[in-house]
Amino acid sequence: MDNELWEKLEGKKVLVAGDFMIDRYIEGEVRRISPEAPVPVIEVRSEREVPGGAGNVINNILSLGGAARAVGCLGTDAEGDALLSMLKGRGADVSFIFRDKARPTIVKTRVVSGFQQFLRYDKEKIAPPSVECMRFFRLHEEEIFEGADIVLLSDYGKGTFTQECAQFFIQGARRRGLKVVVDPKGRDYSRYYGATVCTPNLKELKEASGMPAESEEELLAAAEMVRGENGLGNVLVTRSEKGMSLIPGAKGKKDDYPALAKEVIDVTGAGDTVVSVIALALAAGLPFSKACKMANRAASVVVSKFGSATATRVELIGDSLSKKETIPQKDAALLADCLRAQGKKIVFTNGCFDILHAGHISSFRRARELGDVLVVGLNSDASVRRIKGEKRPVIGEKDRAALLLGLETVDYVIIFGEDTPEGLIREIRPDVLVKGKDWESKQPVAGQRFVESYGGRVAFMQLEEGLSTTSIIEKIKKSYAD
Image 1 (cartoon, rainbow, N blue to C red):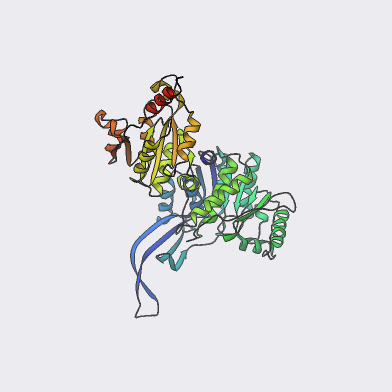
Image 2 (cartoon, rainbow, N blue to C red):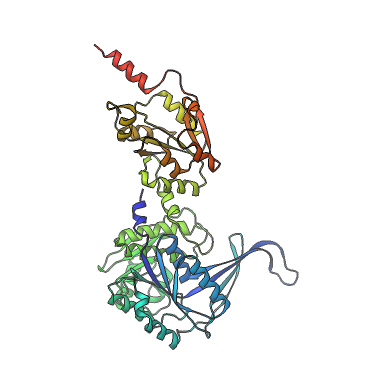
């Protein structure tokens, strides 16, 4: 599991400055054409609002366990109140959002049916930050940067990032030894001078460089020109179905990261996801190579959703969980969350399984039929010794786990060190707990009351007559007694 990498992002604080807005979705069904004009009539079923622009960046950061501070400008209107409430409700620090009565809060409204967008209309006023806004930023500079691990500029081309404003954040970050990630817009990248990494998409790279970027050589030349002429440390080009390419400081070098998405439904906000992961990974001290791989993975999750979406750690780890793997006990709850997010019905059983025999194999097969995934809790060597005696186990825990994972019916093995699986069961919360029939008279078995408390059930499996590890050991001892 690569859970450890994603865990490193937790708690990292990102200062997000940029164009904050509301993404509004009016969703419905199209059943007829209007008699007034040749246009579809949408029967509205629902309306929803989510933070957009730099607000979607913050959503992504928070969904990955990071912390975010929003810095920008909103109107004094009801939409501004609503957006602040949304961001604050998600856990963002909104103390440094300046409210400007001359600047309406940006709202992008999309009318959609299914996954088809029929219309978008925008309420916005593109203008630079006011004198009062910049005065507010300067007055609170120390508090704005306090505690930040990295700075991220989310430029949606709505006027926030003038040369003065962009450099306020970039130079402020550099004075404090902080890296700066920029999601750019427009042709003039000189205002991003000094940024650690800039993340244009292919279209934006062509506009900024004034050069073609169709071939790999052209892309490299365009990115190097943008990087060199504007004093940027690195350029990361997002390339849709081709993934992304990192052009670092070393001249003539390009690192490619192929796209991982299996299904593309909507690319809205994928760039926000990329910059969010890049910022968190760099803040965690990870190298660019790992940051790019993680961002690529997160983008593949987001493009499979509709609208401004985010990726959670559970989703990111879920697809990377390989079956036939021994899962560390500390990741048991995360494994279960990943499986449930995929709609899987979890079956759990446990035991020492010291000498694997036909009875075990039969029990696993029947247990697996009760759900979608079979997770086996395996007693550690130390716990087997406490339960069975000092001469056991005959086979060590790693080899016992390998044998279990070699069975088609066993999906995951978790080695636990306690004498009973009660704690492990509480972490996994299985839908079905399976025990041998010989435990039926000893009810309640470990974990039974807990499983039944949330609607799970306990199944007692009939055992194969005359088959047990103890009997096999005794038979071997008798056979080789001489």
